Amino acid sequence: MTTVDIKGISKQYLPGNPVLLPLDLCVNSGELFFLLGPSGCGKSTMLRIIAGFVKPDTGTVSFDRQDITDMPPEKRQTAMVFQNYALWPHMTVYENVAFGLNAAGVKNPELDRSVKAALETVQLGGYHDRKPTSLSGGQQQRVALARALAVNPKILLLDEPLSNLDARLRDSMRVEIRRICKERHLTAIYVTHDRKEALSMADRIAVIDKGAIQQIGTPEDLYRRPANRFVASFLGECNFISGTVISRGENKTVVETGIGTLTSALSPPEGDAKITVLIRPENILIGGDSAPNSFDAAIENGVFLGETAVWNINSNRCRLTVTELGTRPRTSGDKCRFSIAAENIVLLK
Ligand code: ADP
Ligand code: MG
Image (cartoon, rainbow, N blue to C red; front, side, top):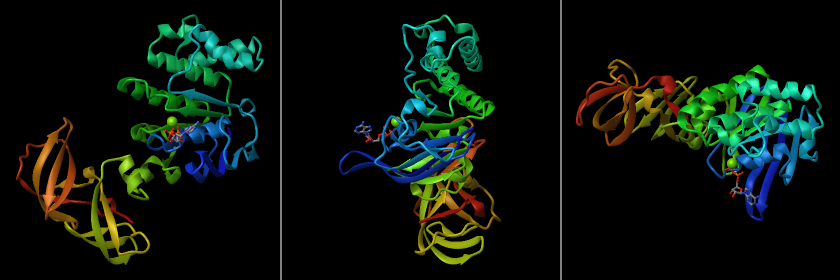
């Protein structure tokens, strides 16, 4: 159980090209914390700074409030899992998992006990003598995870660990990695560019763009109450409409928009009356005549996706996307009434 405190960490590899702007971050003990952002935004750099493989230009990293910024990586008691597994092909599964323990001077019977326990945890108890090349991608990644767990790290670091696996395997590994982290009360920092991975696994997420933290929060916070347009669109589909605030009140903001006057249950951003209104496609309901936030629109076209359909609609020359669950037959030109609950009208700068 270890806390991680990042204070004022910044990094540039090349002069004039900052990769991380000074940033602060706290990870709680036992937390599964995600760094989420597009490729090249500095996630792996941040993880390598925490592991000690990269030296930051400014700032400090502390574990359990002890400053470890200048501590060499092998003393930090972290373990890293990589996208490409990084297993030794000439060693058996058992030898791969024992590698870190051997290097740390751990002897039998403790060594044997730790290796077997780690392989049991990842459900590869019967695979001791196999070579990594005879295993599937998913099994190889489990061996890499067992190797990381075997050293009983203070902090588990995972850098896009599921990106090489196919979609179905990825789904089951998400559940399994979360289970293992929670069972072992591990503090874990997990890097990904995949929003679904972050939303489905994380206790909390830091969304990073251009070397800066855009927002930190629970998956639900970030999805439902994004701080800005970048976070909103990185976490899901969005409709953005320009609006003008015409009255501000406690839990009640009235905004004039192209689809009519909307009443939001949320506070507007500070400052300018010109704002952006965010409405997620699944929050625009078809029907609901008596709802306060309702409007007429015509269906322009749509895509049938099985359990849902996505419709492009046009209201007063304002184009919106609507996701409908449990689809009914609709055709281009159909005119419908649409409505939005006040708590789903999000107001952004
Ligand atoms: P991410 O993991 O979010 O994709 P990285 O931290 O790997 O991002 O990289 C961030 C930026 O830093 C990228 O533009 C990358 O090209 C650059 N970068 C990463 N490592 C090095 C390095 N060792 N030398 C020079 N530039 C680097
Ligand atoms: Mg990376």
